[in-house]
Image (cartoon, rainbow, N blue to C red; front, side):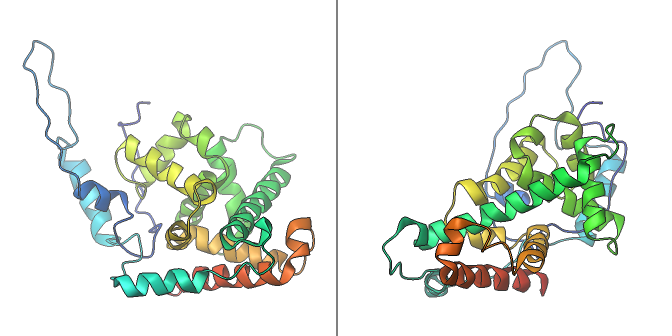
Amino acid sequence: MALNQRKNFYIPVPRYASNDLYSPKARNSRTSSFETTKEDISPPQKTRNDDDDETKSLKSKRSLQYPSRIKSVSKTREEIKKMKMDMTFDNESGCLATRCDVVYKTILRDFRRYFLDEYKLFKTGKNSEWTLAESLFQFTTSIYPTKTEKECRGISLDLGCLLFPKEIVKEQNFLQVIQDFGTFGDEIETIKSEIMKIHGFLYKFSIDKIEECFQNISLSLLFLTYVNRTRETRIDGNPTMKRNSSIYLKARKILEDKASGCLSL
C-alpha cells in the first residue's frame, strides 16, 4: 500500500504538551513555497491541497480535538538565559566525563540503552511474525497496562524513534503506521524529519535540545519510568557514572524535574 493511501485514521493522543515552533505544522507555516505546474497529456497529480472531502474532514476533526502538541511558552531572552544557566554546572574536576553536556548526554544515552535492552529481552520467545511497530506496541502495553490502546500506540511510536530511528525511516510499514496515527505530520518527509529529530536529542546534543526533548510527552513518561525502575542501580552499574555519582545524580534530578514538569501541564 502506498504511503499516501490511508485506510484508517486514528484520533491520537498528542505527542507534545502544546503547540510551539518545534512542531512540524509550525515549522511548515513559517516556510513559503511556490510551486509551478506543467500542462501535459498525463492525468493531473494529486497535491497536498487536493485531499478529498473525507480526508479533509478527518484532518479537521483531529486538529480540533488535539490542537496542541508542544509546550508553548513565550520566553524572554533573559528567561532563556536563566534556563540554560540552571541546567549548567561547574566542572570542578576538569574531567571530560563531568562536563555538563557530557553528563546529560551520558544519562540520555543510558536511558535509550535501558529501553533497548528491555525491548530485546521482551522480544525473546515472542511472536516472530510481529512487525517492528507491532512488537514495540506490545512492549509498551506491557510497561503501561492501564493506558489506552491509543496512548500506548503513541508512546510506542516515539519509543521506536528513540531506539531505531535509522531503521524506521527506511521501513515503509512503520512509516505507514506513523502516518495513519497522525501526530508526526501528514507528509512523509515531515515524518522522517520528526523521527530524526528524536535521534538528534541524543546524538546532536545541546542544552536547547534537552528542553525540546522534555516537551515530548512520551519521552518524558519513558524517562520517568527509566528513573523509577533504575534509581538505585543504574548509576552504580556504569563505571563512568559511578566514579562521579554525585554529579550524575544531580543532573538526573534536573532531567527528572523537566520530565515531571512536562507531564504536569
